[in-house]
Length: 532
Image 1 (cartoon, rainbow, N blue to C red):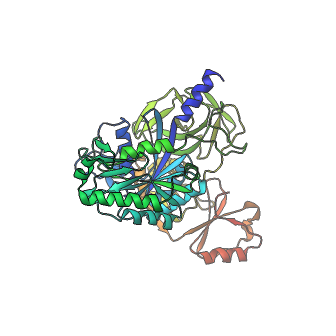
Image 2 (cartoon, rainbow, N blue to C red; image 1 turned 135 degrees about the vertical axis):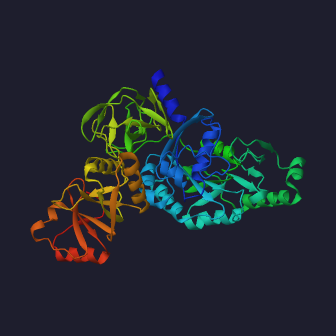
Image 3 (cartoon, rainbow, N blue to C red; image 1 turned 90 degrees about the vertical axis):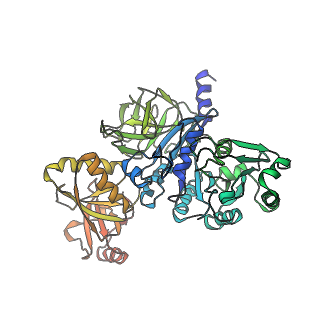
């Protein structure tokens, strides 16, 4: 084995690439901040909605995110910790941006599921969990906000098992809750870990550790808390699920950790245990079979495109998940879908809006490459195998529609450019009625809040004020071209015919009855729920 191969293998095995998922306001972005704090990537953490600090979370870079205190776009963050190279994909929690989250999960090797201790498993968490479950990726659970009054820890475990249908194994156990939350008992190390106040969570929390039988803990905790902890541990040992690494890696068992991202209590023990348990980058499915991460051929796929991350340059960045081989700055690769050679000249890595030009990267890493308008979500790049294509980037059918136009006819060029670029990001889908121009278009989105983001970004990034009228349509179907005869096509009054960006015929419906009616009216018509 050559020295080069050893270097590649070593780099692959020290990488961890994971997504953080949760319902809105469970503390996902705050937890991401704290990982960066412990990894030394930032010196002081700013909570998304912190009152004590005017800082905004590092992972929220859009102005609209800072104003509303929510994440609306997935962020990519890389940092080092204990010789691990960590890539975090911080995803939007709000269901209106789930399309971006689902695509981002395709680039992750594992997922951290953040649950609010007061609310338990919530609706959006269920949806995201099932996407992870379908992919069979390991899911690690962090039960957050233990510094506030919440549900009983045993009730939370029951909630995870009953609602999500996955067994759980607590790796640590909370000592107290609310204002009495003192720390955790680490079941793996069989030790108590008590924390002090880390400056309202802005700096690293120091811990006091030791054996539970040590008299000092009886004094520090008081008789009642100490006795409760001993009883809880005994009950867990008797009735709880045992830790089983194979079941965890197959997505059948979730390790559970308790803590408070806001105060940093339990964050570092979680990070350390998580990095030990979670796997390095694995092989990926493709049209040529499974591609080993440690193979020499460089390859990867585009899972996200973001325009205008840098206001001064109006740039456009394609996010590439590296799946195999070593990436080197300036290398020439095949853009498989276009069968063209492209040179990757200025690769970047991110801590949110902060970027660094890099010379090399490895499987598991997420890099940003300049996109002159040639990349689409799902595209494969490969150095040696020009016919290699990675599979599995999902397409989503929009559920909300609006007719949009520009207020100022002189801004039509910017209007069309803005809509086109945002559609290529996957944020919106564009449709137009046959034989009509680009002055008035129909926009489809998965969640209604995306309309607000569209309006905001057109104004801020392209200088365009738009007029928008929401439409009553709720269902979309693509027509198989061979089955469509425009001359004698029969439609209902509450349905319209439009074209997508590839000029494929598409129908928008107000209700399911109309879908059945049109199928009956038009013999041999074939409709599909996703784009062809």
